Image 1 (cartoon, rainbow, N blue to C red):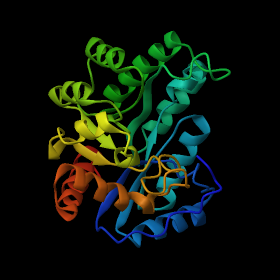
Image 2 (image 1 turned 90 degrees about the vertical axis):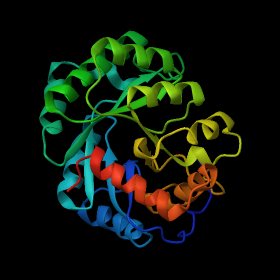
Image 3 (image 1 turned 180 degrees about the vertical axis):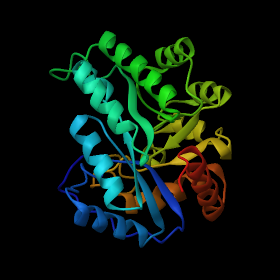
Amino acid sequence: MSRERPAPPLPEPLRSLVDAHTHLDACGAVDAASVATILDRAESVGVGRVVTVADDLDAARFAVDAAHWDPRVWAATAIHPTRANVLDDAVKAEIERLSADPRVVAIGETGLDYYWPGKLEGCATAREQHDGFRWHIDLAKRLGKPLMIHNREADDDLLAVLKAEGAPETVIFHCFSSGPEMARACIDAGYVLSLSGTVSFKNAHALREAAVLIPSDQLLVETDAPFLTPHPFRGAPNESYCLPYTARALAEIRGEDPVELAGHVTANAERVYSLV
């Protein structure tokens, strides 16, 4: 992501959206005031609630704090698969403690990432990722919370691990980026697919084919901010206020009215995350 491009302008409001996956800390939030600034900007275009997601222990602590600072914020806590090699007993105990907080609505993001091993110094091996993924699956089931999946180039193995371990009642594939075959497998398993700005990319042909297959009650939308800013602002910093751009692009791909799609994905987020 380039920081040289200016931030996108505020989109036309699309009411009552929930950003199903963002990273407020990576967007620059450090305290209650900066969290409120980001949420005020989002709320001005109809994005009234967000789930801020952890990828390491510090981020998990921040996510829980942010969810207590602002009632518009909810949290998801886990150790990212590329960092699964830090999951010793002390880290597991702290993640479990944080995850039990009532403001934590999912265990995530966890899963498998086969892109970074061998490219990123210190990245967890595939074996370490599998072990960490299984631990997070068990944690989600013990706490009765949804499991939020990160998947990069690991379609078959992810599905195999979920089947072998027994998936939690609710599984969310965050930033679903695979094609129609994977989409059908997830849909048949009852998993929820969350789409980000990547669905608006003109070269995302397989993903766009998959997007039209997802039943309305298994669909979420997210920013994954500050990453994956939707077209035509790709490469600019992303933030929750940009979610209406993705929702409108998705509605166009699916041949739906944006307001109706917004209603569906908001109801889904409320149900999936038990937002009250």
